[in-house]
Length: 309
Image (cartoon, rainbow, N blue to C red):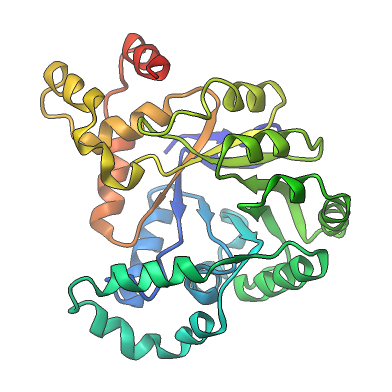
């Protein structure tokens, strides 16, 4: 595993990050024991960057990370987020997980239905008092007294310009509860606003062959300011299987899997520190590790596909 600094920070992150959105979700097809085994395997393979959020799995994603890594805290980098909240009914689902999860494994379309309902129930909340409460709760669930990287979770531009939010996060950083500050951005406007805040250390953005809007402006701007870039959604939800670039490359590189090309395309970008990929099974973990170690794409192809509109 290779490691790089996350922007100007002292965090040495693995080039592959472990996305923890589904590790304790009702939609996860794996048992908690199997997921814990996958987390251990990732750690053993050199993965040290684990990306979660307070609402993932109704808080159970953070709880699982806290349980699995409680004795290895100094050896990992924990990134979490806050700013989204779920409806009461979605929050209460946590109590039904032990019974509902096994049933959903056998209900065709069940996991997709649950995921859609959860997404529809999300609401944004960025009041300083709410954020402070959520960060304190995350610390307890993660079983730690500090968060390596805290990110605002999909905030609108006005939140990123809110001085009260800025002061809260700086106060928590000064108190040692947060080491570095970041923003998980969904679009160019929010990424631009995040980079306008001089205290920002990292941004997390979607980057893929299917979504290249961040490439012309945001990634170079982040790099020039020493802001670390965490790339997510590099597989574009599986939509890249039939992407024209994939078809073109398959002629030049027979046997290359589409996800290997997709991962290499993003991780070879000099501005990107780490690529976060959601994983729950050992098979998926191994496939991603192999893709990370696959033969790099020729620079002329990188330039060609990065510039295609």
